[in-house]
Length: 426
Image (cartoon, rainbow, N blue to C red; front, top):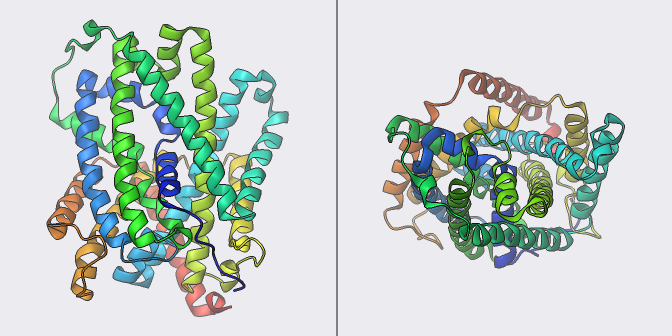
C-alpha cells in the first residue's frame, strides 16, 4: 500500500451521497407499478415502508457508529459473523453494484435517444457507454473531493427537478382521482413494501466509503436519518401528484414524464427526461464510488489480492481497485450479458439487512462500551427488522434465489482460492 485515503466527505456531502444513491432510476417507473398493485393505498404502502426502513437505518446507524474504516456492511459482517460470511457479503454487494451500473448505464443510453435519436443506433452505443464509464472512473481516480462535488451538484439538480414536479403538480391534482376503486388487500401490501424497500435502498451501501468520511462515527448515523426523511417525503409527494394528475397511471411506463406532460406540456416532459438522465448519471457516479471501495476494503482486510488495496500517492484513491472495477463494468455493460439488477438485488439487500441487524446485538455482547450512536431498544428493533426481512423474503422468486445461490457459490470458491493459494497476502 502507498499513501492513505483522504477524509474529504463532510456531513452534508454524505447526506447528498445517500440521497443520490437512494433516488435512482427506480423512481422513474415506481409510481405506476405501485398504483397497479394497491391503487390509492400505495400512499400508505410508502409510509409503511418508510417505517420499516427507519428500523433498518437505526440498526445501520448504531453499528456504523462503531466503525471508521472503508467497507460498510461488508466490514460489519466480517467483524461479527466471521471471514467467510463477511467475504460473501462483500462479494455479493460488489457484484450487485456492477450489475446495477450495467443496467442503469444501458437505460441511460435508451433515454438519451429521446433527445438525440442517433444514439439508438448500435454504432453510437458503445462509444457513449465507454465515455460515461471512463469519465466517471477518471473523476473517482482523481480524488474523493472532485467526485463528491460532482455528486453534490447532481443531487441538488435532481432534488430541485423532483421537488419542482411535486410543487407544480399539486396545483393540478384532481380529487376525483383518489376514489377507491379496489379494496385494501393486506397480502398485496407485503409485495408493495418489498418493491419499495429496494426503491429506498442505497443507505445500506452508502456507508461503504466511510474511510473517506470526516468523523464517520458521528456523520454516518446523522446523515442516514436526515437523508431518509427527505427521500420519504419526496416519494409520498411524487406518488400523490402522479395519482392526482395522471389518468390510467397503472398503464404508464414513464409516469413522472407523462404526468408532467399533462400539466406542463411537451416542455415539462422534456425537462423530466433530462432530469431522468441526471438522476441516472448521479446513480452511476455513486455506483462507481462504492463498487471500487468495496473491492479496496476486501483487499485491505486481506481477503483479496493485496495489490487491490494500493492507494495512489498523488490523488489518495484506491487506483488499482478503480481500474479493475472499470474493466469489469465495461465488459458487463457493453456485452449486455449481465443479470438484471432486480433479479438478484432482492436477496442481496435482504442478506445485507439481516447481517447488519444481527451485528447490533452481537457487537453489544462483544463490546461493553456504549456505541457513539446508541439506539434505545436496539436489540428489540433489530429483532423486528430481521423478522420483517424474513417475511419479505417469502416473496422472493425462484429465479432470483437461483441466481443469488450461484453467485454465492462462486464467491465461496473464490474465498477458499484466495485463502489457500495465499494471493490475498500478495
